[in-house]
Amino acid sequence: MKVYNPRTGMDALQVLPISLASADQRASLAGRTGPGTCYRLYTENAYKNEMLQSTVPEIQQTNLEYLWVLGALNNVGDLTELGWQMVEFPLDPPLAKLLLMGEQFECLNDVLTIVSMLSVPSVFFRPKDREEESDAAREMFVVPESDHLTLVNVYEQWKVNEYMGDFLQVKGLRRARDIRSQLLDILKKLEFHYLTIYAINFFSSHALNLWLFKFV
Image 1 (cartoon, rainbow, N blue to C red):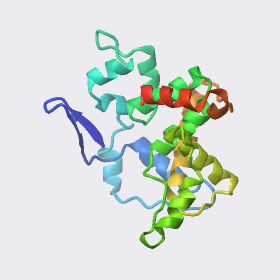
Image 2: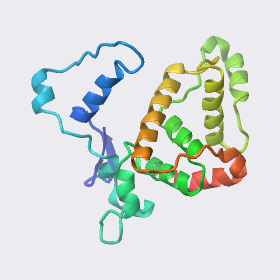
Image 3: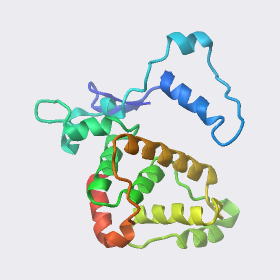
Image 4: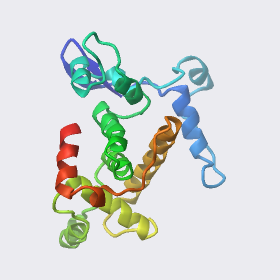
């Protein structure tokens, strides 16, 4: 888990137990699409006595000044209305704000995909003995005006091709799909309007790219 250290002014990665809520959620995924088994790599005592009830929100692990710049804190250090909404998402604060701004600019569908794709490692696969082929395949997804819209294009083409694709990291894309589903469930709980308007059509690509650059 990434934790902000106020003494050094830097973020550091720390190994911490998962929360009970996270453990139960992972167990539920074992039977999501069919019969499955969940193997817990910790003791029953650890599950009952050592885990927090819920995961510490990302927003509580971040530099306070940074949160103020994002608009999550007011001048006296209290959470703003935006900050309270950001807390609901298991995301880095910039991505949480980006997601919330997606509804305001009526491009939530694409922003939801962008945030999910940014939450996983690169989905492009480039084997050493097939560099030219993989580079050519990647070029087919490129949206020249924006790397972010390229990610949207990759995800949408992957869906159109029945979740298959050459030189793509399918495991990463599946993870992005799961994250997208989870974020959508949170948005519905917050009663956000899920719009199917595509940003590439609603805005010019250049304008959306500038907007994304501002918030990421």
